[in-house]
Image (tube, rainbow, N blue to C red; front, top):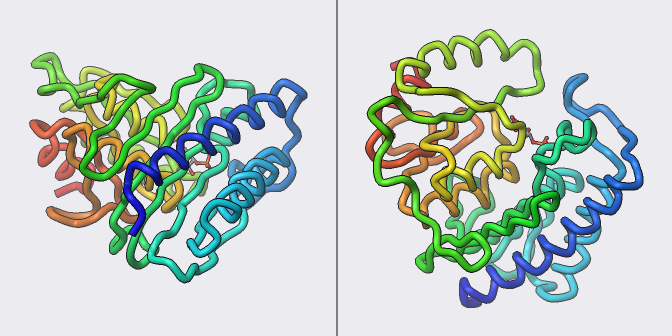
Length: 266
Ligand code: IPD
């Protein structure tokens, strides 16, 4: 089994290189290449090119590992490691020129599904700011060279929370009802548009908590490890449940149970 730190270093190197390519393509202009599940769910040529770069770099360095990417899907490997990749998380921001997007790369072991995997290493790189968040299981979470820890507790004035909304308009009413249930815990709410950065910001103490229904594995794989390694709690659709498409909640420990209950409507 490779060392978590080695996988982290590889994830970080590739995330930086991929992020620089995304930034270059953004500066050249972005065209929407296709619409996916719903009108708002877009993919750009850059998403595909950046994922191809990440995939080829990983194949060259670790040819036996599996791959699960947003744009090109799943491929089982013969080792126990799978790379879970979102080449550009926050594609809508990217397409509109809002500088909140990230390359998200995680290495997981075991069955490559969020309910079963063990996240081993993570890198989330925001090219416009040049910020690289990274973590290795048991070795902490870092922003470049600075060790991260979640805020010690949510402020008495209420927690600074973030959320996101799925692309399917049919889910919006439920998402807004969730926001209404959660707001009594909040001093304010952010919707920045990139789940990997929302999670990285919980790890960095820039947010006290985050919740979202409908995330895909590549949206949360790296960010959830960042939060856990920074001392936060991460969970899914019930007490003790793992993150899944049904629910992702991440926060400082002091508000986790209340945030989870409100997000779920318990
Ligand atoms: C999306 C972003 C967004 C979240 C959506 C995700 P994508 O990922 O993370 O913040 O609200 O649920 O699908 O499509 O830009 O990679």
